[in-house]
Picture 1 (spheres, rainbow, N blue to C red):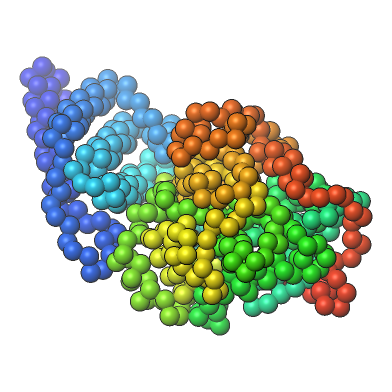
Picture 2: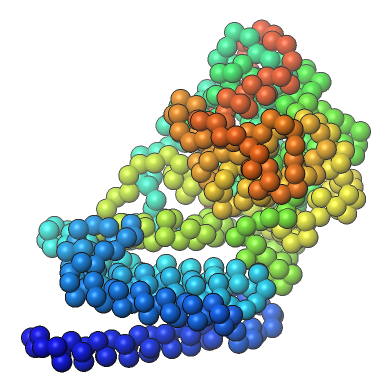
Length: 571
């Protein structure tokens, strides 16, 4: 090779020309960008994108600077690529692969920077950023066997066996209809997940009510009802004995019940939000009262289960009933002022389309819903498994939470359409008298019961600001706690694990902005469960002898052992 100074000068000039062409192509791509289906049908075409000149100039300068640095490092074999996808020795030992990875990361940063530099309203920028993120994640060189140095190295070392295994994994996942995140063959509901001992003591077409066997000689007189999200299976709250919130509640002396939602099929395609409130949430509350004889109970709602629970309590309050002594809301949206990344999908045209599509009947398939949530974190929940399963031929390790995550549920179309319009789009639940549910005008100002509100700091589904917003509309005595991590990992954090922190504020102040609350909060080591348990006991009444049998007499007798058959139905 010609190593003269003239050679390197010519190479440098060629590289500079290439950079200019790359920048021009990036700008052209943005001007003709397809938002990946985020523009609803019937929406007007997007105008040509404009950029803030100062941001654009700074971004262009940084692009040329970083590209030159990559070039110089590659000439001296000192290129360092800091990204988990390219962290193996196979990438660093291959100069071409390392250069491709570094160039990809530079282009990815630049494209995301361009998205932030668009001169538009915040929602348009968020949509553009989301679309670019999907495009960038899918285009990573690690996703393609032709460019993935690690997968190529493994194929050579295994004499092609990894490729053969990858094809088998691909065929298996195509047959089951989703990408495997864990070895699902190692889990069975009722055998090694959802194993807390109990019995189904009531059922209708919407849910089964499970009562759990006491683990203490005495229980609190006010029973405890958990309402999980109907978009998932309830056993996220009962994965393994060591991380089961349900078992923890039982061990703390609470007579515990849980709603196990039915996985809707075609027979439920016409069911509405009102049906779920009246025939599920309210029915569950009254059934627990009937079984235990308790005039008041304590209740917990998780995610959408919390939205359902708060709506049910508002309906009951409008009827002059206040059967719940205290309520816990975990990562719940009641006040939909901050809905995070999911807001990217929501506008009038999208909601109208969904109402037209299934508002009068139909099913939202569970896999469609699961895919949407997975692509909110595409690198972690999609492409990571594509690379591991198919390019490397690996079997993902067993993980109970990811098994649950893959166990999707359907939703009735009318329920889903009502929920979209009245929560995410119009935020009607917090507007007194704006909507009627089960024939009653909803007014959250009547919910003067004590509440425990929990939000996760890094939650991408219910942002911490969205969880905190409940404190601004619920008038009763409140306790707000922020936990570390995300939507699920923050909630499922047993004390014995001694992991993560939580934040408390004891001055009783709830400023309008969550950041102001955080500024006055104190970090506490470990799980929030112990704080919640101490709070709940103050609302649970005196202790009484634990029941010896499930249910009550012939009216509420054991139907089958927990976890019941509803939770085992596949979407």
